[in-house]
Image 1 (cartoon, rainbow, N blue to C red):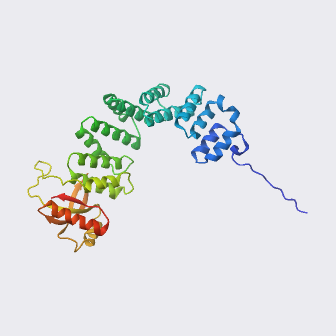
Image 2 (cartoon, rainbow, N blue to C red):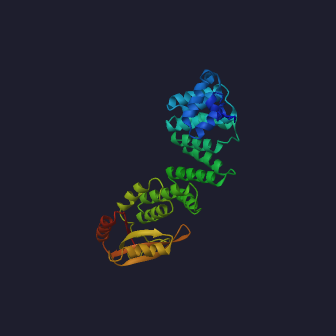
Image 3 (cartoon, rainbow, N blue to C red):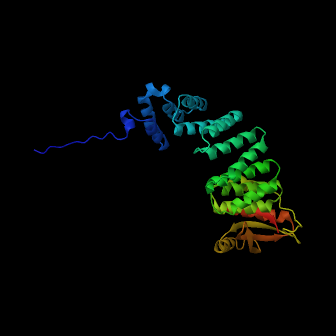
Amino acid sequence: MKRIIIVVWFGFPAICGSATAQDIYLLIQSGKIDDAREAMQARSGQIQSDGNLLFCAALLEPNADSATALLEAALAKGAEDRFAQESYYRLAQMSCLTERYEKAVQWTLEYAGHYPKGVFLPDVTRLQALAFEQTNRSAQALDIVDQYVKRKLDREVAQRGLLDKARLLANMGKPVGAAAILSRLTKEGDGEAVPPALYMLAATSLRTGKAEDAGRYYALLFEEFPLAVGLGSLEDQISSAPPTPARDDQAERVTATYYSVKLGVFSSADNARAQAGAFAGKGSPIDIVQKRIQGKTYHVVYVGKFREYDAAARLRTTLQQQTGEKYEVTAR
């Protein structure tokens, strides 16, 4: 007779009630919220006296005020450094989200005092700058960001700092400095700060009446980052903006102004020709013009050539009705 040996494995310790705070934290990070709650329930009698468990309880708490109270209790009960650091960061974060900016300043200063080389220091510093900015201390916020970007930071973190500096400069009425930083960011080609930099350049161009520049930045954003947040809103603003007036300066001399409908901006010449071909017969002439934008060569497709803005606008309306897409009237 054969004997069958059955091996029973209880798996992750959270199931059997011996989960540590680190085990529970890993469950939360991996999205296993129900398992984390079950593990916390198994240790419910110890939560109020254990800073690490209080921290985990705060992560599972959906109410912001209750979560804040739990994080404060976690610090008071001596949560381990790894959990204490994140507690300070989350307290500062929630204070900003609930517009309690003075409290955010307090948490960020305490974090920097306790952990001058902490793992959350870059994020905490950005929150500190935001809190100062929102309490009308923009000069102090700018000083904080300047110190931040001078550190030896990895590329993504440095980009975020530069983006913050550009926003601060723009809000302080220094658009030239802001534009220089944003242009520098867009030339880096990739990174999480590039889409918001292009968006901010487009939005600034719209505010200063430079619709054509805004359209170029929008086209770059759409082509390189088609899922970027805010594209739809930006598109609506550009399509309804008046054309850029003719300018006479060293950067761009406009000697004769006429209006065209811009059909797109492409990094690939083949894609530009394909777009032009798709609109053959819908208007004339169709032009493909090479332009250097942010240090790269792009191919801009135009249709129509009108002396009057209204005539170009009518063509744009017709094309939008035919294709369901949005286009821009530009002065050339």
